[in-house]
Length: 378
Image (cartoon, rainbow, N blue to C red):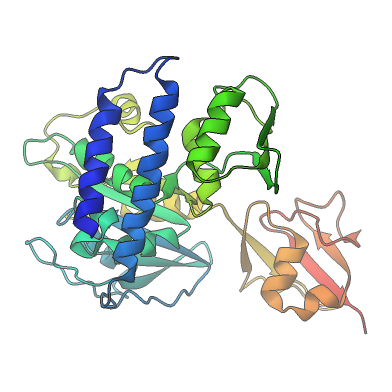
């Protein structure tokens, strides 16, 4: 069954690649994209329904955040995990492909935070279809807050950027969207009336294109509102399916010891497409400390210190939250009764206008280093 779906996907991809993009062909292109999205969803569903494949992938989430290592075989993922966790993890290392055949977790302690790192088996082409333990690899990636894509230098001293593009394609085909956010779309399904389209700002699709695409995805009656400009057909398709994962990537370029000539940072940034990357050498332990701090920064973690009422603040064991989190997030992490019994908080730190400022509301956004006393109803 999956072979037939793969063949159909390949056929549609070839048709899409050969179709010239212009106003006259846009509806045909949108139709092909909708068909591809449905087939890829079917393929992932088929792969996920196959028996077996446990193999150590049922990783219990621990720590303050989770980071997944993904890359082709033999790029140095296992060795890197052992270095980042400072010997507290034993991920098997060897000089042949597919040494890692199950997910191996490790804990990295940095900036008073505990970050769970997961070394995954080397991804191969067709992972989104379940090949090469692909379904387990991609399922683990979907639960991570940050994806560390690991590529490396070739023996000739050049960077293997083709691996990066392949991994991005595999993740995209599996419904994982990197370095982006969900589109601002509202769809209210109705029992009759067809598709009613309203929007804000300039749009790439007109009402006929939206209606055609919605109908192709089996939505016949609905109010559709785009609350931001330039929403693409792909974004609308993603929104309708509703099972996409939006996360961030950080690119690690290993084996810098093989580099023959220095490559300007600007050239690498342009090739990768963003500045979120680092060049390391696991062999020579080069830039490992830098990478540890970069992971902490990329996760947008902050430290909050609790001060029990009328006592000294506990500055030894902070509670780790994320930028943008609120007092409610903090209370929820401590215990659910801190939500129901909340009276007010006193805050010393960046988020307060003055030391010990009182906050009756739970939606106040806290900042790194805040010291907080929470008062509950008696």
